[in-house]
Image (cartoon, rainbow, N blue to C red; front, top):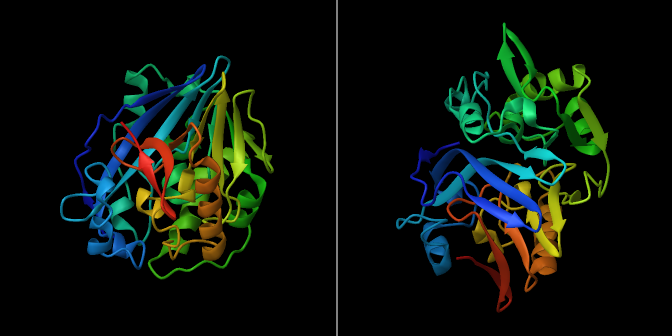
Amino acid sequence: MTAKEADQPCASHQRWQVGDVTITKFVDCVEAHDLSHIFTDATRDAVLAIDWLKPHFVTPEGLGLLSFHALVVETPDRRIIVDTCWGDGKDRGPWEVRSNLQTRFLQNLEDAGFARESFDTVLCTHLHVDHVGWNTMLVDGKWVPTFPKARYLLDRTEFEFWRNPHDVPNGDGFADVQDLCFLDSVKPVYDAGLIDLVEGTHSVCDEVSLLPTRGHSAGHVSIHISSQGEEAVITGDMTHHPCQLVHPEWGLKEDYDFDQARRTREKLFNDVAERPVLVIGTHWAGVTAGYVRRDGEVYRLEYE
């Protein structure tokens, strides 16, 4: 994984209102990547040809901006955190640049009024390393749940896939990193009895439900929010970068099912196109959210 830290074009703490639900973004880091290292066909020329990606999603040189952030979802009755980024102090084996991080992530939450003890629910769209890291924290040499009063809701298929022996590509150490991740960021929460395994379009509360979006991982879900006639979708890794609105066929070598991931993107983009559904990208940098609009045979993101 090659990347460099990037300046964030917009404020780290963005906020959106969806009916009675407030969604706040907390950035762990933003990086600039050569997208051809992520999507094989995403050459710089191909990326720069998509004019509307600038300035929020690509640099003037054609590097793709990727944000790693968590989303705090506040409903009238529940406080939820969606995807918990990289985490601190964790051995990531061959990914040395990701090992033993020390960030202000928890302090930023606290400073904004979101003490870790105040969360009712943790949602993980899937169990890849950059989405579960702050599920746990190190206390007296032991990994313990970061959000001790929350229930951690995980898709059963996703959990069982990583808990049991699995066959995933390990060309850049991905499988090794995932095994380390499960041991320090998922198993301790399970052992503490805080995990609820759920299936399908599970209703978290009146305003929030899980939306199965399989392909990138075995049990990947996105998050659907509906309140007072307004809607939003938090994508997870159903999509990594807005360039996939133009090229839904661009996928990752780490995708569990490459073809299914493409079909999932095509279906979700089609379902939300021309509808007032706010799409919040889990790795989309800059403005991070917008509305999907048809642009000939493909799509574009409309944002302010």
